[in-house]
Image (tube, rainbow, N blue to C red; front, side, top):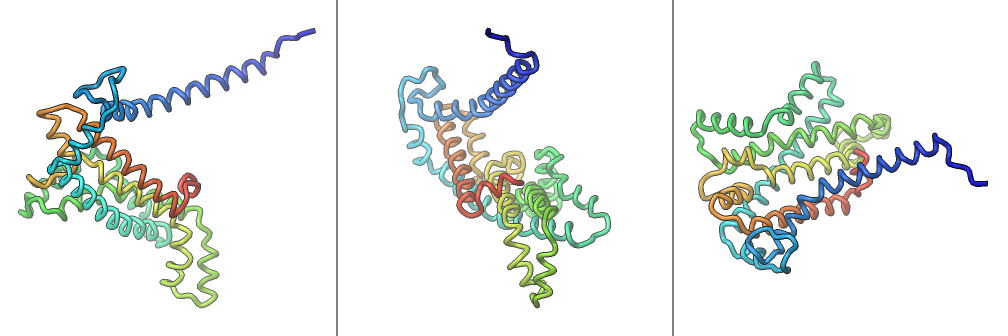
Amino acid sequence: MITAPSTPRLTLRLGRFCYLALNVAVVVFLLAPIAIVFVFALNPTPYIQFPPVGVSLRWFEKFFASRDFMNALWLSLEVAAMTTIAATLFGASAALALARGGLPGSRVITAIMLSPLMLPAILTGLALFQSYVLLDVGRPLWGLVLGHTLVSIPYVVRTTLAVLQNFDTRLEEAARNLGAGPLRTYFEVTLPLTKPGVMAGAVFAFIVSFDQFPVSLFLVSPGRETLPITLFNYLKFDLDGTIGAASVVSILLAVLVVFGLDRTVGLRSYAKL
């Protein structure tokens, strides 16, 4: 005799199906723009067409042959590299001070350090631009790096604090009891154990700087523009697959950075954050 499944079991299956369907819908929603960008970059026609009429690398050739795009790409990489170094050094040091320094008002200081995440980046860029005007320094490269560092430091602080909150301080005490000084304890005990947080923050800093548009819009100097600003200016006059090719290059660079994290730290350590 065949019996119908019980109501609780049927409800459980229905709930699981809805949960999986919702997750699939979210993944499709997140990946659909990336798929459209790839189709646009590989489509031989100078406009988005579905279904594609073929596959062509003409837009990649145009992108890499363009002197303006190449100069912008190298400048973006240069600024992102300097921003990553600066944000990692300052952010990791600040996180260590906040977690171990016993500073009065540490929660308020932490909120201030994370405040760039709560403010629109365009307001940050405008404020920095006005500050540079008042100081009469123009739009130097170090000013652009400073602006990118300002909006990147919160990511390093947050990921490093996440590791330090679960850090076993007895390991540092054991190192000191064995005769290690504060500096040696930091480099041989603290830094290796906080490496996942620091490296994750550095990856975020690189990606945020490389793709930064609002801050760069106010701080770049004419003739020395980052890739997002160059793409914005290009869109004013033309819209073809070169935009898609540039976007694909940016996506692949982000993937390479994450792959580098996987090779140095491991994605499991990264995912625990």
